[in-house]
Amino acid sequence: MDWVDLVVIPIIKGALILFILLTATAYLTLFERKLIARFQVRLGPNRAGPFGLLQPLADAVKLFFKEEVVPGHVNKPVYLLAPMMAMVPAIALFAVVPLGPDLSLFGRRIPLHMGGDVNVALLYVLAIASVGTYGVMLAGWASNNNYSLLGAMRTSAQMISYELPMAIIVASLLLVTGTMSVVEIVEQPRPLWAWLWLWLGFPLYFITMLAESNRAPFDFPETENELIAGYQTEYGGFKFAVFYISEYLHMLTSSAVAVTLFFGGWRGPFVDQFPLLGPVYLALKTVAILFLYVWVRASIPRLRYDQLMSFGWKYLLPWSLLYLAVTAVLVVALS
Image (cartoon, rainbow, N blue to C red; front, side):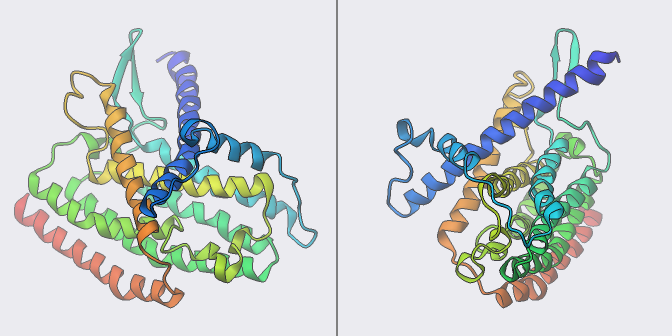
């Protein structure tokens, strides 16, 4: 392995994946607005460019050139650090997602994932997913604003309440697959009963994804009608844009992780003959999960906060524990 494999190829892959992630995130905002407009029988953005395709660019330019104001009562270092703390983990989470089978280009074997085949990737996913919420918590605390602090406290409660069921569902997946490597989870053959059983547990996992991403109907940290945007109240301009981007990055990366864990990732027909179909299949499956995100937002109103906590502890946690117990029985009986 020479310096090209150690330095040049990782830098090129990292820059390419970062460009794809940020571009996809920008157009995810357009995807959501157009899709919700269809649910509500209206047009959605259609003025900026043909069919509204330049709307994400217009939004970016507007937010970038807005006046940057830092209130005098905030804890400035933490206040400025919080947006980065929210965005960086969302990008780091994508490092272990395999985008496709290994390619052979110019006599070199190039794996299509940014961070390599990590043998404890499932632990990495859970750890990084939890770190992202600290940006929201720090933003609420550093803003020195009661509404912002309430939003941050709601974030910490959601994180504790819904990460437990998420970890239990992931533990069930570990029992079925027998490995923590995400690459092996995608590539290993799986019996039909295992596919069907994991798909049965996906709705539980998807609910935890909604809560961890602070998406409707669990968008309590930024409840506009109660907390005036909550943890974002004191943020504007580019700093607000970073939080805005972070939310959609979390949607994108969590959807890619869910596809990788539950739906075979990049695997699909003819991938063995045409390896470049792998990223296409991964993208299509990810878009399907993103459609579910938007569908839920357009269909279900925001819950009350006591309903959020009650559902997490009284229903979702017992269901996930029951799912883990039945998974263990099935693995012993059918493997």
